[in-house]
Length: 433
Ligand SMILES: *Cc1c(COP(=O)(O)O)cnc(C)c1O
Image (cartoon, rainbow, N blue to C red; front, side, top):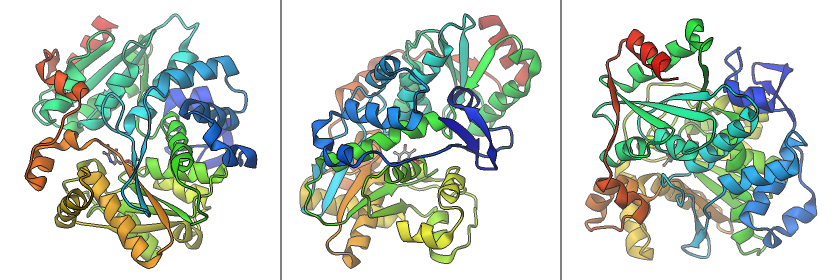
């Protein structure tokens, strides 16, 4: 497997280079050179494969010998450590629960796989690798848990003091071991600026091997394609067309679904569900892509005004709007509709959706109103307890908090406090690594 940049399709790099660099020098995004279809027998016989075995087969097919099979097996076993169950709400609507990992969001799949790949490629290198991440909340938790205790790799997470939720902060600051949290007296943008400056500082990068755990890293997309196969395996086969509905922000999850389709999974329709940040649904409708500043909503992990993976979607379809809008339908909903949907689904099915999943359910329902035989799968991207105060207010009752989140509340937070000045951050890095 080699990868090209969406801005230069004739210049290839290895998977190792793409994973450590995150972004090509030309500021495009890395794409696999080819995403060929899997054998038909595999798709027909998905039921004979466990989730891990599906991950292994899909990955082996895509990576084409870059990693020896026994090592690849090991990487998959260490990254796919929790299930992705499909829950039936009705004959036509299913929920794919992607929140059974340590940070209770689908980002756990990508973060764990990226940690394993980096650790694999880092073997035999006696210089330790330091991963720098700036987080506004969610990504940091998944990255911290994903890299926790990974040999040879240290993780430094910068977050804005007082600007992440209580439980998000606990996810970042209570692990210890190879994970260090830096509490910055500033905003998320200040955190990001510190990380950016560090990568540009030759004096620093000559002394410390730095890498990022950026959300656009191709290593995060690859494992996200596995669970589309896992969901399809669990769906009853009745010959009706299958739609996957993806609550979207930066569109990584949906792009991974397009990879699965290219690999031969018979997905008839993708539905891009967004909150009021509707740049992509507007593009699908009009053919014009107009990024704008994001607005704050209840489903805040999707508050994105210029989705970073849009360039990958254009690349897959050679920028042909007609083909894109055939495969992907887009719908957007505001907070009031989201709240109403959470209440409806709870009263009808006794199922608690989180605000992101609710946007997805709304989009699926809207699509199915016109496409009656379509069987739909909504990707539930986070556990509702991650948004506890909102969910309890909307449903008017207490909801259950999974043990792994509940125990965090009692854990002691440990951080290094810092201002927004670069020099003190640099000194700290040089003293510690
Ligand atoms: C990150 C996130 C999303 C958006 O996913 P993209 O791949 O960026 O489209 C949706 N829901 C939740 C809960 C998330 O954390």
